[in-house]
Length: 111
Image (cartoon, rainbow, N blue to C red; front, side, top):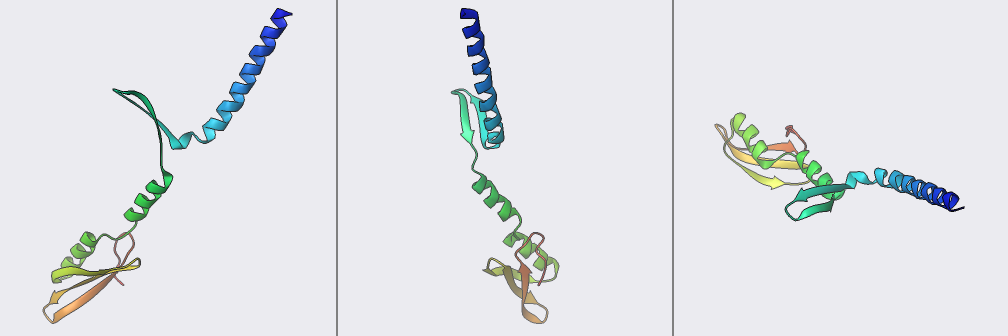
């Protein structure tokens, strides 16, 4: 009888462990373990923060817009307006003051 109870307990333990590991595998992408001088620390990643960084990479940076404007011949170029959809750069050409408008997406295409 004791052998039967030991086998039943072992079977139950293995079954519960199997159920627990299947649920943690699905959520393991948000968990990171870091090993350092203070031991092992679990770190839960913030997916929203990573999404915000990815969105910033998809935008046109003012530095890139200025570089494109200078390559097109604008002197004393400066960013005068930045919106969610566009960047406006103003500067001087041989004909006088002019303005260039860029889409606020990766690559800064001119509108």
